[in-house]
Amino acid sequence: MRERFLRIGIMGGTFDPVHLGHLVTAERARSEFSLEQVLFLPSGISPHKTTKRVSEAEHRYMMTLLATLSNPHFEVSRIDIDRTGISYTIDSLRILKEHYGPNVELFFITGADAIFEIMNWKDSNQYLEIAHFIAASRPGFSLEELPSDTREWVARHQERFHLLRVPAMAISSTDIRERVQQGDSIRYMVPELVDHYIRRHDLYLK
Ligand code: NAP
Image (cartoon, rainbow, N blue to C red; front, side):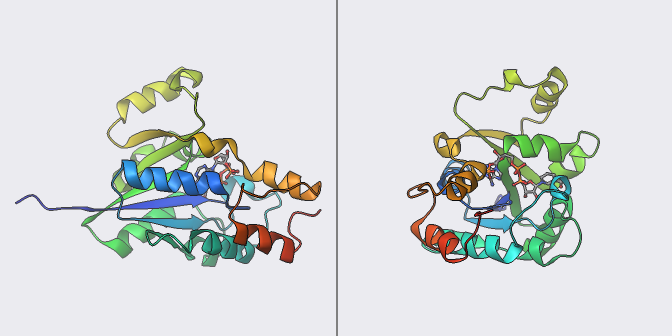
């Protein structure tokens, strides 16, 4: 009898703040790739954001927790935010692979741009040995937009690299932060509890 692998999605992101685009992405990925569970992984200090201002990890963690509470298939992990130093995705994936054991297949889900940055070409095989990658992109995004070497790379790794087009990806954390700063409404762009949390903690006002 063929051994059955459990499929777990790992939803990596800064989540500053988490919004409906992220939730729809996670749910679409869960259903299209038959994932048992999606583990949200708010990032610690991202390699490409060491000089950018990012909200405190505890706020991002709490908002992610509030946003995912009602979905029994969603969970939130602290492994990145509790780790000191820069959190490289490869380290997080190794920790999770060890934690879940050999009978689990991991699917790392994040924005398409971030995935192309993570791969950084020279180490890409190591990543792909540990996990599948699901690149979430806005509708209308086409691989034709990518440079030819990236397209060739994608073609060579079709078995482990997947593109997921998500309509709600038009919502972005940057836009939400700007709206809050300008006193504009973000209702229906984030779950209600996240909206309350942002107001209560005066996030994104300056
Ligand atoms: P980012 O550069 O802030 O985001 C790039 C794009 O992807 C944005 O449009 C962003 O939208 C979107 N996005 C981010 N997370 C998403 C998700 N889970 N689902 C759908 N779209 C998403 O990316 P980031 O949030 O800092 O990083 C994404 C993940 O990649 C994190 O887990 C991070 O640790 C990892 N990463 C690792 C390395 C590395 O190890 N070398 C390098 C870069 C990133 P929003 O702004 O609306 O979220």
